[in-house]
Every structure is written in structure tokens, then in C-alpha cells.
Length: 273
Image 1 (cartoon, helix red, strand yellow):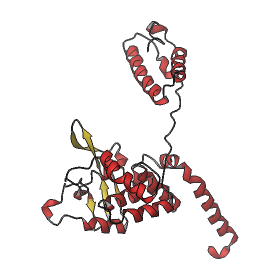
Image 2 (image 1 turned 90 degrees about the vertical axis):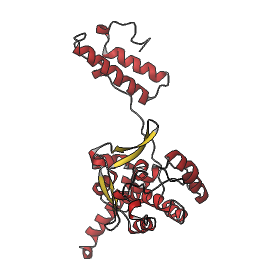
Image 3 (image 1 turned 60 degrees about the vertical axis):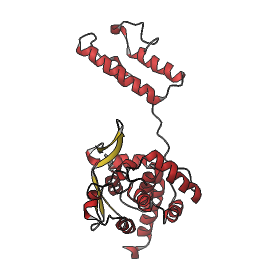
Image 4 (image 1 turned 90 degrees about the horizontal axis):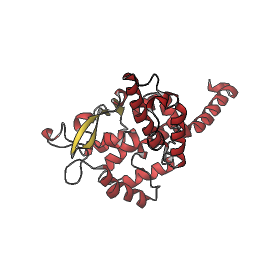
């Protein structure tokens, strides 16, 4: 915290001092995210000082933090999504791309799917873990929140694609990954994007979105199609419907226009009742 707070005695640090420090950091072009991290560390240290009776109150509790700008969501339009579906036809990872586009699952979730997670007879996938690279090795990690554990309904054409790659030997199923790299191991997302996803987008003339943006595309198209936000929230594993609507607020004007037209048709045309 030097030189901002360093010279001051601990007991004399005020909320104004901390607020001034954060303002100076913004002037020095430090990001809002970095300042928020700095605040978390400082606040924790001052809380410890309170427990040790070195200060009576935590001045960091009265500070206003800079707003962290939300990354702009980039999604495929409905027409672009149709182009994407045509482009993935026959691709070695056809089923993977189809699953990503239609379920809204995170890359770490569908790259970590095992055959035990799929119930193709019912047309569902159980999302309970993610595949992550940790400490030099692949590990299955639990979903971040309890709401993250969910069962997602698959579209019929996606089920058909998955059936085509079901291992013939029963013993080869179970905990075996559904999607694997060409050499048989887990798929590393960065390499998959470089070797397969980005070239696919370029060849189809589509925007250079992130692989994660297929999740956003799935949610956006579902909202446009009139699917209940509650259903979409559950499918995505969000903490609440309010969070889902906040994230995809760019779709709300379209939904309101469609809702107004439907209500008007009902009021003005009694035969629709």
C-alpha cells in the first residue's frame, strides 16, 4: 500500500485515506478488478487488526469501490447459428459442437462428460463436475455451486449424434470421456480452440467468438424462442432467474416487443381467446 497508506499509523487510517488511495490507483490506470482485489486483501488485514484490538472499526467497510465493467457478451445471431450448424456437419467433433450450442453447458463441463453422465434413452445429460488441469494433471472438479449440478434435456438431433459415437464395447463406457483428443486423452480447451473452433468459424465466415460464447448463444436463442427464463436459468445452472435476466438483458427489448404484440392480439382479436 506504499506510498499511499504506508507512512500512516494503523490507528489513524481512515475511510477517506483508503478512498483516496483507490482514486489514485484509478488515475494510474489500474483496473477496477485489481482495485477490488486490493480492497479484499486490505479489508481482510484490517479485520484481523480489529480482532487483535489494534483498531476499533474497519475503515475499509465505508469505502465505495469502482464498478467492474462487465465483459461484453458476443453471440451468434439465429441466422449465424444456422450457418454454424451447417458448418459442423460431418466435423470430427460434430457432436461436441452440437452439445455446446444447444445446452448452454460450459466448456469445462462438456469436455469432462463421461458416458455415465449421459442417459440417451431419456435424452438427458447430468452435469455434476468439470474437467480441469490442476498441478500438472487432469482432475474432475465439483461444480462451483449446488445449482451448477443439474440435468439438461438434449435435443433429439444431438442425441442421435451422440448415439453414433457410443463405444461398442460395454466395458469401454462408464467413466470414459465422451469427447477425447485425437490421441485419446482429454481435450485441452486452448488447443481445441486453436486447431478446430477458430478454423471452423473462419471457414464459415462467422464472427471470431470465444468457445464459451456458444453457451451465451444457446441462452440467447432460447430466450428469443420464448423459452421460460426460469427453465433457461436451471439449464445454465445459474444462481437465480434474476441473474440470468441480468446477464442476457440485451434480449429483453425483443422479448418485451413480442409480449406486447401477443397481448395486443389477445385484446383486439377475441377469437384468440
